[in-house]
Amino acid sequence: MSSFTFEFNLTLIFSCSSSQFVAVANLFHALYQRGDGMRAVDFTEYRPKLQEKLGKDVEQLIYLFPSAHKSALLADGILMAPVGEDIEVPNVLEGGMVTIPKELRPYLVDMEVINSHDQHVLENSNPVHNLWSFYQHATVMPIMSEGARESIIEYQKRGAGASVADVLNWHEGRFADGGKEIPELWQKHLELFRAPDGNFVCVEENLKRLADKDGDGEIDWDEFVSADFQQCFV
Amino acid sequence: MARSTLVLASAAAFLAASGYTDAFSVPSQNHFVSTKTKRSSFAAPSLLTNSIRPSTHHSSTSLAVLSKEQALHTAERLAGMSRGEIQHIFEDLDADGSGAIDLAELDLLAKYFPGETFTPEVRAKLMKEIDTDGNGEIDAEEFYQWMVVNAKSDGSADSKGTKQMQMRQARLEVGKDGIDPHLMELLDELGVGAVVQKVTHPLHSAFGRTLYDHFVSCYLISKEWGNPEVSWHKRLKACHLLHLNLI
Image (cartoon, rainbow over all chains, first blue to last red; front, side, top):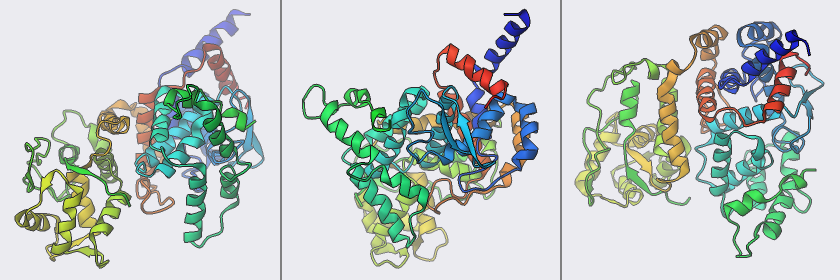
């Protein structure tokens, strides 16, 4: 390895290991496109400017976030696909597909959790809503920051008593109440909760059968998190 | 709806410190005759104005970074209730469905405060206090603005969720001073302060907040939570990918 390469690597380590690395990306996370499709700036114009001012590493997370966010409801998306593998999601900014490497996924997962946490955390009085929030994030809990993980655990605790069937009924009911057809993205999402083949039905059944390791008829938190959720998404 | 159990508490001090007191009807004293020792936390701010102003209680300019909407957002978290949840209570009290609470209906508020004694005198004083336009009825907005300041959900007082809300307050108090000036300048340049979010539903907690508020709040949460814990060699590879733009 040449000395030039060695110095170059040191520079990169410092940049990406900064305590504010993900925080700065969060400060601009939905700049290029929000969940509803609105764009605060023209990303083709602003990408070079943000790369210059924030660094390519931070800007790349900002570029990937809208596509990662759009995939969050899907089984092969940023939150539910098995960890440890690269994933491909639709590129909402430029069309086609974009790859989210497994090495970047923890940062984008944290950005997604924080985006939701800032906007949804108060809707915690309904166990069904909370269970839905928990299940969406269950498979990626191992790669989150500790703070993000604690917030997801809180959703699980506040989801006690609810079931995946309740989650399905709630969502289908709210679309029916609104007199609207369920959008395709949501149809795919709700299939995850539909018996008998839904992925979260699998998770729920596994919890009932496997998680109660001490056989006391209840699933405590340690037992809960020891369950392998990913096998239901492979 | 399951009834919430509430206690008297006050986000008023926080809001006053934030400089966002114009929207609130803040009581000058606790009108409830408590069966317990009167809570010292129910202290009213001494300075109220009709304009939004920066805090005079903090040496820094920290809380001036928050818009009025963000201050309300934070007050909801401190109260442990969203606007939607307060609206549910309002609808429960509005027994005749008229869209307003009259003096007789106000009696129903007592069941939400089981630790307080609700006398006719207290009821009359509350009506006068909450009914800020003095028309003899309490509309939904008047009720929300009183509740978000004066009530606190007691259901999870010692829970991690409540602690997170308290931590959030502390985080927001770091505010602008915790963000590098060049990042704040960049936010201004990008114009995100002018983008008001109209997402999903008016009761959604992001509705009406600016994109700027949401971005700043996310930054502060992320700074508190830190980076995901990934091994050094994975981080090195991630840095390579990011810097060399191989994705």
